[in-house]
Image (cartoon, rainbow, N blue to C red; front, side):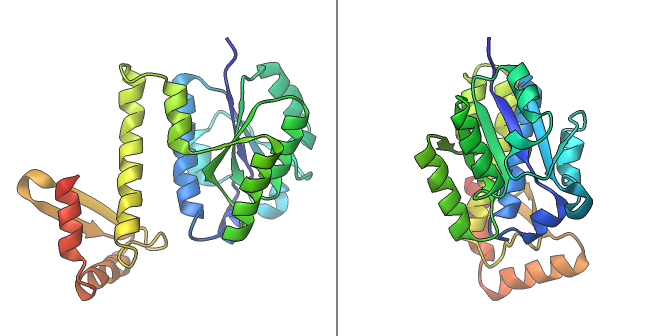
Amino acid sequence: MPQPVLVVVDVQERLFNAMDAEHRDEMVRNIKILGATARRLGVPVLVTEQYPRGLGHTLPELRALLDDVTPLEKTAFSCCSAEGFAERLRGLRPSRVILTGIEAHVCVLLTALDLLGQGFAVSVVADAVSSRTTANLELGLAQARQGGAVVTATETVVFQLLGRADTDAFHEIAKLLKWNTFTAQIYDRLPLAFTRDQEVFVQMATEEKRAALWGMDQAGTRTAVEVFVQNGLLERFLELVWRR
């Protein structure tokens, strides 16, 4: 039975740092969720790298997750022009190609349009792609949709792949989605306290009504605590944790 194929486009060190800070960390989190889901369900994954000699390699955290996938190097913007990509994809005979990565309005878009032109069904995962600006991200998604691609979301793709809730795979992957959704809710409700640059983490023990907050280092932790106290957000945070 044909399966979809997940494609991770050019999520490389130097490119990632140039992306819109508001979206890039969310993009990586969602690609990791999609990658973990693909691994669990045996969905094939392809990874590309645009001129890695100059732009670096795929982010280490994604390389660790997809350690058995050899990236396909390219200099063309569309993955379809990368040596070996089209052949590997045709060999997999995918029911659908799921696109993620960088940039939404360039390499992801051009790949989507080329794939559509070749008769493939294409999905672009809106919260798992990024561009240098929000405007370019939105334009890229809009043009992909106009070209015939399905513009979708990480959770939609995951639940489509899982198919049903009475499996071990569902219970394993649902934990990732629950944490991702909770983190996004924290960001939305407490934007001053939780920034993606601070890399703030939360530890909860709801039975004992305790919550701890910390950052990647002592300075980050102090900053996070100061913001919590100064902006009167601690009570709101604890209330949200207890209602989780």
